[in-house]
Image (tube, one colour):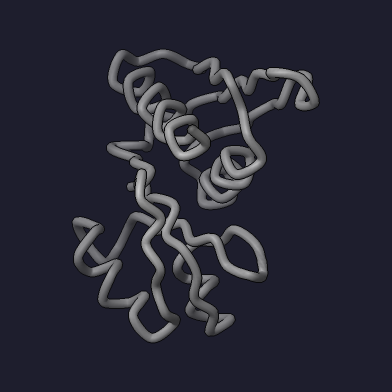
Length: 129
């Protein structure tokens, strides 16, 4: 069920972007989803997001920027080693210039560039470009 929550939230963001909405409401929420959105904010794909009532069902309001072409969560968490990250990104992302693969590592949730810099592997959560 937890993997489906992230996938539904990312599809909601993509659908709102395609329809030209300025914001999207995500519900229910998870801490992994908040970490995924934090990476998207850091890389400039969303303007901002706010978490409302995180201890109950909760809701996240995401301010969209219009940069997201596609973002997906993998329903199967695929293990990836540190030396295989570069080849995985070449297969999943359309170009080398833009797009990020999000990986859950022992050091926390991070994008593929940070994982390569720290030389850690983990489980692939999803990607966005």
